[in-house]
Amino acid sequence: MNPNSRRTFLKNTLAFASLAMLETSLDFKKAKPLLSFSTLGCPNWSFDTILKYAVDNAYDGIEIRGIQKQLDLTKCPEFSSFNIAETKRKVADNKLKIVDLGSSAELHHADLSKRKTQLDEAKRFIDLAAKLDCPFIRVFPNDLPKDQDEAQTIDLIIKGLLELGDYAKGSSVSVLLESHGKVIQTDLLLKIMKASEHPNVGMVWDIFNMWSITKESPTFVYQKLHPYIRHTHIKDANLLNGKEEYVLLGKGEAPIAEAVKVLSKGGYKGFYSFEWEKLWHPEIQEPEIAIPDFPMAIKKYF
Image 1 (spheres, helix red, strand yellow):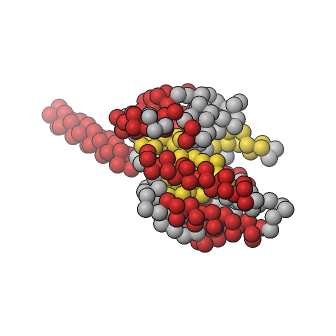
Image 2: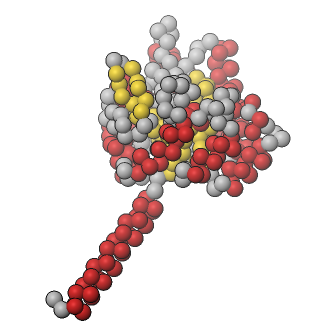
Image 3: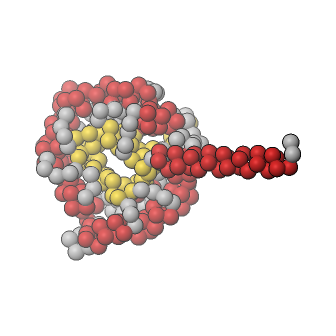
């Protein structure tokens, strides 16, 4: 090969390589999933710190599950009538979105007083979400008490979802039932969701919550429940002697790769929300490490 031909060959090779790298980069940006994290993972952070970490680590949104350990968000000063406009401005200025408000409301209670307390909390969260332009609030099923007929409990959960869906009607807020507590079997969740079909009702798929107990594959779960899934919770853990040991994404046993595959191929357009349970498990890695790690760790699944 003469020198001119060699130079031309090398030039063309470099050009093609650069083009391939550019196309790969553009493809990744085009396919980039929407990422958020739950404030359950940073229970001591101020709201400004939460926003800073979200921006610095390329998150698209935040899921509010308490601020500085105050779980009743309607009592947080950031969401008072005096401060809510400023809070919304901060979120918008940082090009973020509040994607979900995590209530503690449980729908399984038969006791009328307890039931009213739980539904009232959910309704207050719906009102707050509407003011924040937040699309979702989360509620729990949450239990199947042994002293309560199971069919009656399921009926209570269904009626609660429909009541809350009707309360949210006319707003842009939907009430999402999380796969949580003792209500984590796919067929049971499917029964509940079918019976509570409503424009303002859906579900949160917590992949690990379900799999750690049922061992049902994400493919099976998604095939059955995909019409109702509007939000996801992503976490990883190892199961040791029947207990969960939470670890950074990709370091545990959770079938995250399979779940992400069925979600992305199935056309899921919602958020992949990192739920680091630091408030409940203070022994796990600090949020300053875990929250920056998640966006980097989840890339490999896409």
